[in-house]
Length: 426
Image (tube, rainbow, N blue to C red; front, side, top):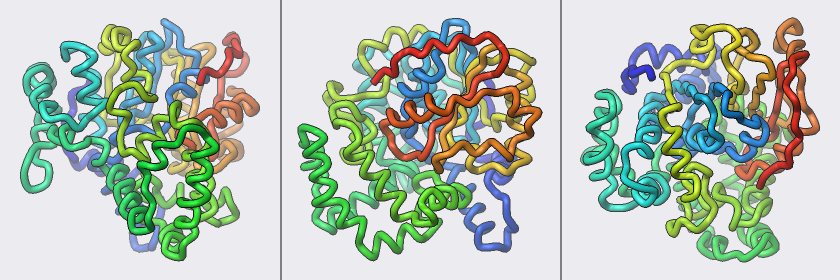
């Protein structure tokens, strides 16, 4: 594990700028890109919004597989550990995400049991969670990570105390969801009634009767036309344009349909993303839907494999450039490619292809429906890979987070990886 400082160093700011800023600093889009890059120096995603069950179905992780992933909030890296991989090496440009991941990797090994682990990351709103950090975790963590969580939160208190105050209400995403709840209350929407729905029919009725009229208001339509309004969802200007392009420029239509899918596409009893959005946290009893890493039955497996996870504060391309050839099996790119220029995409895929072992798999998501690689990544590189279009569509349809337009699976062409076509688990 690389123990770089999780503070916002000039190097981090430079990397963020290189990843996000594509236009002149004096243009409107350039100003928005710089503002978005600034967002990523702090906590953005307290919880990752890609479905790890779909990821694991696509990757078919085996005991010899070396996984490389963009970390974000770390939920999916932790969930991959339930599949017993050889290693999971994560990267992220947000120093806060790096500190959060290091906390998560240490917790199952150092906390006394699943109850304490769930209290910290499943409830994340219990008095005494800061003491769990102080007593069990801090003595064994690197200095930079301890300094981050002991750092000041606002005027008073420590960052670790967010886990006593409802951690999933913090970060850019948590604050965005909080504002959405405030607007909903002003419009007379009570999401506790939505959480009481017993089936998809009742969920759909609530959406059509209560939520859709609010989304169709002039105020919400005005908000969705503002590219900066979606920074809280982690959507930079480039991705905003891709989202809008999925519906002939109508961002309002895109957000309406994706909200409908989140609320009505899956039963609440199965969709922890809906719990996170509309209950602002997981079922506190622990009996509702949860990410795989938080499920009681998976705790001992996560604990046994936690030492296999590591994180670095680098770009994925930079990390891969430092790795030996033919050394990785699975690549998880999240939606990062939506932000990239053609030159950045070619650089990334050149390094992926160089480091990929026989049978390697790459997964990623896009704001739009179609894969973004053809015509942008060199044929000499992309031609080595096979795109599984039909399987990608089926996997996308099972993604419970419902916020992306497409899920995409590529495998290294011409090398022996048996596509076992196992059923997609729910």
